[in-house]
Image (cartoon, rainbow, N blue to C red; front, side):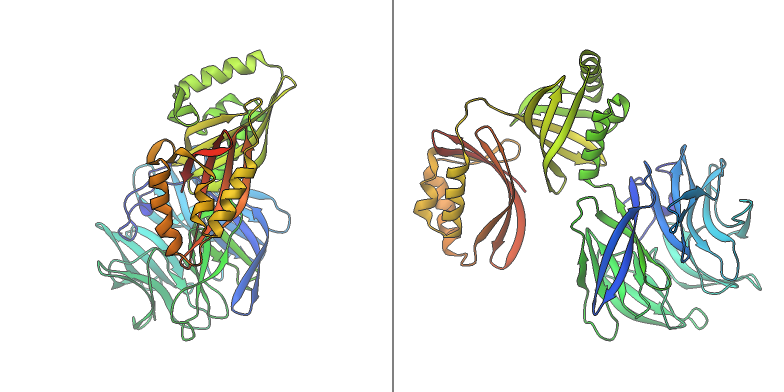
Length: 505
């Protein structure tokens, strides 16, 4: 069923895309003044494929949608024991968006059958037996306002509408057309929150499900999923950052927490427990996670698992642009032969740089006891490594560190003469992998002189450094006119001067 989920494709005017490879992390949550602190990260899904839409069944249990054997079923995670188990097994369909039904031990979930029928069902958690709750509506997402009132986003043509369903008398009222996926109860209030989508803007609004009265809360941009803390603070995920907004106190979104963990990438869902002591976060598997998987499968000599990390037409190169071979099929043949010819092999990652979809690993490779030093540059797209570029150790190469450090100090001093003195006369600048942007001292001086003069706060801090032969690979954190950004520079030193720089941004 992977990639067929209609309710994930027709959301908020977003372009159609297949289900991502996602994981669910659980954190202990502490509210500190206007901010939050997250600790004790646990991967509660730890599963290849789609894991999403967590909700807290109670203070000890998280339920979520998870893929196995080509279908998506409902799993539960016991926070106390750390054990997980399956609540449903529906060969005729897949379940999504599990939620506990008020005043009941049962759960509700969206089921998408193999026939294409999409309905909201009730599930007995002990027997797994199900029955339809709303027989006609194609529900995308739902919220239990009470045991008798459901607030749903219902798929109608090419949009979702906000519909309030009264189960006691079977009535349904459409209160808003064209809404987003997030429907939540607002703490200490009779209102719910939802996303009102129009061509001009997207607004998070409140609504009384009984009267239908609505009020704007805040405009949103990329934020599509939220959770409310008991103190009235609204959280939203964006990239690897959590944003906060307190209606009535704040004027706009503000960053409240940034994940430094390289595996927390592109937050897509968040959920908080009733006491706001734990937070569940859904993230797409990061480029670092994909690369780490290929390291682990390589070390396990798992050829199929290793090859699955790469795209069908993966390009393998020697830096900067010397093609070694192309294609997953060729890769499997080469590594299959290699595993047969070597009794033991392993790779240890000494340092790792992550910048966007590019991962750079400094590696120690050991083959039948022979150790080699190398750097591999991986580019990741759509959960697959699309290119792998090697830089190998060169014997008897000159030490490049001193001259690279000298140019860094001159750069921070904005001393153009001292800066240019570190470069060769025919210095060349490239964008990765091999796009020439400047050649020669004169062009480079013209490029940097005005930049130095117009940037009084210019500063470059080295966050990580790798040295391989005559090359220095620096992860640089730059300050330019009040703005900060990161970039990677690969410096190549020849005859005591920097002869070539390749930038990865």
